Length: 290
Image 1 (cartoon, helix red, strand yellow):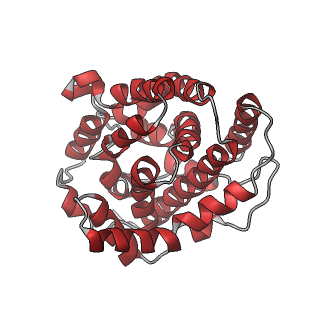
Image 2 (image 1 turned 90 degrees about the vertical axis):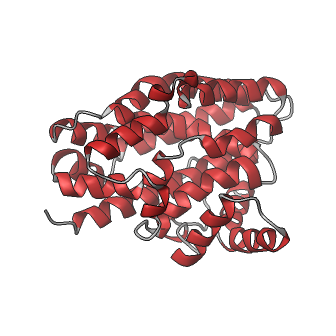
């Protein structure tokens, strides 16, 4: 995904978002999955301080001086349009050329997220003002299949993994996941539970739910071309995320005191982290042989 600026410049590049090293990202993932003790909190804070906090601060400080939530949402639309117009070559490779083993490699790289999709986001709801939180909760209800286990997005990913002959055990993917893809998963934990303000999350998820409408096209096209039956994980997102995008815009507009710089920072750091993870996963796939 593009890291083009919408009227701002910031000394953060997509290449920096995988930092710190893989071992630290894996450690952070482990810490986020358990009830932390006092030492764990210190470890989390230290890793976050080296990794995501500098990005958030830099984007917040360089955010345009939006006069209203409406101006920010217009800038978001423009930023998304720029990204969609500059789809990277890696997306074309995945959609048109990736072999089944290569596609499977990409699926494996995102298994840590797919197997637990949206579970880490639930803590953000009580952190938000009521109307904004309810708009987000409507999105999460869909993500969790409205209580129907078969329709939950994590189950759709399980169906895909099963068709590809892959494990459904989260721990089986820890040794092979790239630091960039660990960062992808860790970002959602940070946004929902660890960030100083839940408004970072609002920008992040407003971006994410809209960007999926073009970024998942290459995944869906690859699955269809390769004859994968259980492609609903991708096609469901292409269907439902237009509604989710609307709900996230509502969540932002519902804020009585929006911190527009934090919301914009959430947009930008999510674009960086998601784009870098996707590039890393496809790069790993390109060295995969049948």
